[in-house]
Image 1 (cartoon, rainbow, N blue to C red):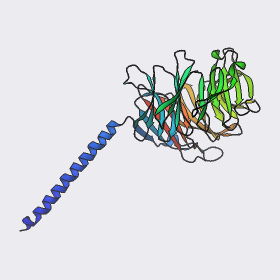
Image 2: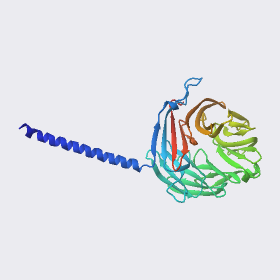
Image 3: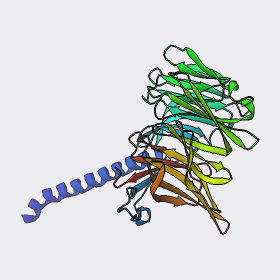
Image 4: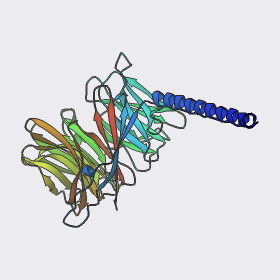
Length: 387
């Protein structure tokens, strides 16, 4: 009698076990499919190695909370941020036999390309810039001359190119996001809404042979001053500052070579370079025309790239140190106070080349890029106590 009573319970128990195993299996297969369908792998580093050391002024503001590494199956040349989880990419797809440069929108949460910006060209150089309002993207692709670019203006709402400009040297967004400055024989402002171009000044008046210069273009933090920097073959560099509102021009010539640059708040530029045979990190004041050395690099050390935070209070830079024939790459972050660096901390280091430092708009999170063979690591550094 007792056996008869137990059988229904045994049957129900067996049914529940089978149902549970089936559900777990289904979820496992589904999760495996989702994992295999992703274009990226994610690694989170939470080690004491990345905690900032205590400084003389107390706890460092740059103690690292964690570093998230996203591995993308492409060779990424450059990128820019829409937000903390979405980036605009310029990349080479290894599955493309022609190895054409492509552009797209990549979602870090989904681990995949979620949009195509429509530009594809057989070239190995270019830049990509998301507008401050996040609605438009400027893509610059170098021509075969390796000096001039074709600039595409891509509108995300209509998902199409709304303008193409040829034979430019450089381009950069203005703060409102509906206009950008471009550089050819002239410095000009281009309105993407109307398609109208306004020439501001002829660069050839200040640089006699601009085609012999390596020209860089920065919009300063005040939003209305543009800096054009050119290095010539005679060992000197020209800095040209143009006020877009007043259309005034200030020039200065520096003995040395100015490489990577970044705007500082409100009327200054940061440079990596060698001035009067002293390698290091420099700040140039647009008002006083004074060049101040922020950091002097000794032998065996070399600064690669710099990125000032949008709030103008922090600066990140990469340093390569040669030791026993091996180069160690490090990311430094420091506070910037009255053109002086304080709280300089190494927040990440590796043997692989580090490039493309970018701060988020709120100046709280730092991104970097490391290219490998057929894949790229996009790193996200989150800090414990930024202020």
